[in-house]
Length: 254
Image (cartoon, rainbow, N blue to C red; front, side, top):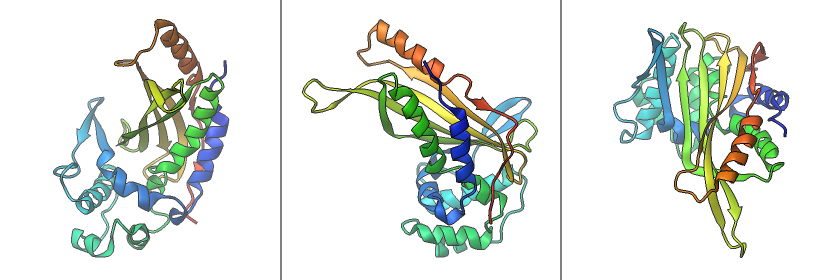
């Protein structure tokens, strides 16, 4: 029984970190994920949630996006850019991703810490990791697909407020094919996350990558005790030894 090959995961994430902004799906993904961001800050060793906009669910996406960018800068202790909400609204059309790319490069630049952070806040790291998760689980006859809308991002700067960590959390559905092969049958769900830790608020280097199994959810599904036990063994083994520290992956902007 094998676990997920973290050496391959590190290699894939290294490639992502060395892409230019415009070659990654940042401008497509951040607008649709902005409402899924949660910002945290450590206070007396406990994490508390930080509000970055009045109402993530109801505010217009341009407001959520602009406030999110400002909040990330604030949490990292970085200077705010000169752009205002009005400027953002006039230059960014979220239906045209290239306008967001142009805005980011104009007001931040390829080497800005916020750009380096955003490179790890899109689907590229997830896809890179999912390939190896899928490969490992498929060897045990486990197939899965995504749960629509079950993709979340958490951000904090560590207990010292100087060590940014971005975590992408997802829930997937394990399925089987019906006897007549006409449909997929959901058997249970699992939640996992990939966390990327930076050396400092400059986000020049990634120093730690953690791949974690958060939960196996059998509630509401017809899953025998034997299958539960077997799946728990497979998942626990697959997600064992999946934390890599002491890295120095350069996040390039050039």
